[in-house]
Each structure stands twice: as C-alpha cells, then as structure tokens.
Length: 331
Ligand SMILES: NC(=O)c1ccc[n+]([C@@H]2O[C@H](COP(=O)([O-])OP(=O)(O)OC[C@H]3O[C@@H](n4cnc5c(N)ncnc54)[C@H](OP(=O)(O)O)[C@@H]3O)[C@@H](O)[C@H]2O)c1
Image (cartoon, rainbow, N blue to C red; front, top):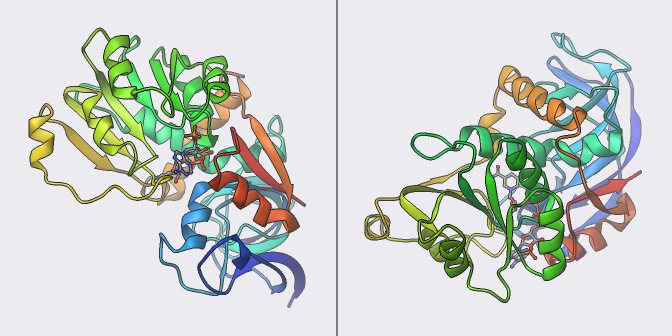
C-alpha cells in the first residue's frame, strides 16, 4: 500500500479567504474507477469562491479546487482510458484539486494532447468546457447562425475570453461586457465584436443601439444579481437568458410573468457538471475544446499565476475583479 504526503489547501469552515489553509495530507492508492494524479498546475475558478464562502453549502473540512493538469501516477481497476505516465487534465467533482497529488474518479479526467502545456490544460478545462456547452448546446429556439448577436457578461474573465474567441470562430457577433475600459479592450482583442463597460454604461440601452433596436437572441449571464433584470431587456422576443453564475450574488426570486411581459422569453440555469456526467460526454466536449486550442482558434490567456501557498491572494484578486483571463496556481 502506497502512502504519499502532499501539500493541500483545505478549509475547516466556510468563510473568507483567511479560511484557506495549507496543510499536509496523506494520499493512498486509487480504488476501482479512480486514478492518482500528480499535478503540474492547478486552475482557479469562481466556483472555488462560492464553495469557500458558503454561497454553495459544502461539507467541511474540504479540500478545494475543481481543475488541474498533471501526470497519471497510478490507475485503479477498471480504468481503461488512462495509463501510468499519461499527461492528463480535468474539470471535475468532487473538489480537491488544490494539492500536489490526489486520488480521484477517472471518469472526468482526459488525456492531454502533447501540444497543450500543463499550464494551459490546468487553466482551460473547467472554463473551456463551459464555453463549449454554452455556445454549442445552450441555444435559443432555432439555434444560432453566423452573424447572430449574443451578449456575454464578464467577457474579459476566464470563461469570457475563451467564449469571445470561440464565438468569433463560430461567426457570431459577441457583445461582451466588462468592468473597465482596459478589460473591454482585452475582450475586443480576443474576438468580441463589441464591448460595453457596464460600470459606466447602461448595457441594455447600448445593446439595443448595437442591434438596431432588435436585441440579442441569447444572453450568457454569469454575473447574476446585478445584471439579471437588464439582461432580460437585452433579449428579442422568444430570446433565451442562459444564467450560469453568481459573481455578484445569486439571482433573486422572480415571478415568471416577467418573462411574458418582456417578450415570451426563456430562461435556463445551467451547470457544467450535468454536461460532464459521463465519460463519453466529457471526452466529446474535451475533444472539441482540444481541437479549438490546438488549431489556435482559441488561445488560453493566463493572466495571473500564484504559488499554491499564495492561494489566499489568488482568491482575493479574483473576488476583487482584479484578474483577467484564467488564473493558475503553480507548484
Ligand atoms: N455554471 C457553470 O457551468 C459555470 C462554469 C464555469 C464558470 N461559471 C461561472 O462563470 C463565471 C466566470 O467564471 P470564471 O472562473 O471565469 O471567473 P472570471 O470571469 O474570471 O471572474 C469573475 C468576473 O465576474 C465579474 N464580476 C461582475 N460583478 C462582480 C462582482 N460583484 N464580484 C466579482 N466579480 C464580478 C468580474 O469581471 P468584470 O470586472 O469585468 O465585471 C470578474 O472578473 C463565474 O460566475 C462562474 O461561477 C459557471
């Protein structure tokens, strides 16, 4: 029986960044259906903040983190798609990626193509698979066609910059919002057709202007509380509000009648984890992402790197809207 020690970041109770503690844990052998992976880089995601601060209630103590890349060190019984020595990356439940080495279910772990670095793999799996299911599977009635307008909030963030580039590759006119002029410039450099600084501009009025009064077919909204109502005002009749996050707080309860009043609208609240519930769906989505990144159509912008031991500063920066693109924790 193997017993390895690993540095890991754990919370003993939910709360502020001060709850994040670097500890030593013992890691054993994988059981059936599991692998042991030694990380080379770890991805930071906004969901880590929700799980840390209590917006998403979680059992404690909890080792945080949902995304990483590394080398497979041991393979449990029944795992056929991975071998010892494989380069691999994942976005996965349960949490636990903030560490040097871990044992985890193999189902969500994918072989990482040689052309994609560990840092890129760690940065892109959760965010890139999210952009994939949003732009390819979370669609308004009749789908999206080249030339269509879509609105994407927080367009200079981790998911946002990937979505800007992917939307451009699909021929869509992505209107991105961001909280500063510098972030708007970054979204434009990465493929957004238009950018709106929603800290200084009325984004609903500006969307109407850009679309000649029509509105967009779909709004991808991960900001939540602060943008929800105005996002509805950006939609054309029968448009879709695809809510997928709560960076400013959760969307407050609302009466469905508001959807009728604003144009017989549709609303959905999506999470990646239903899309990657099986090995097959995970691999199919990952293959799509790998193809986009390998071909250079989507470049993964790593805006910040923090050592694992500096994870508190990483959370503080992410929550304070000080980051752009993806953030990784290095080992
Ligand atoms: N449901 C899913 O499947 C899924 C999967 C992945 C991610 N997500 C969600 O997608 C969003 C983006 O994730 P990410 O990891 O790539 O993060 P991120 O976009 O890099 O960071 C969040 C961004 O949200 C914006 N924001 C607006 N109001 C904010 C506020 N009050 N506090 C903090 N940030 C605020 C900020 O950009 P500006 O300064 O430009 O406004 C900030 O940089 C998050 O909401 C996340 O939960 C959902």
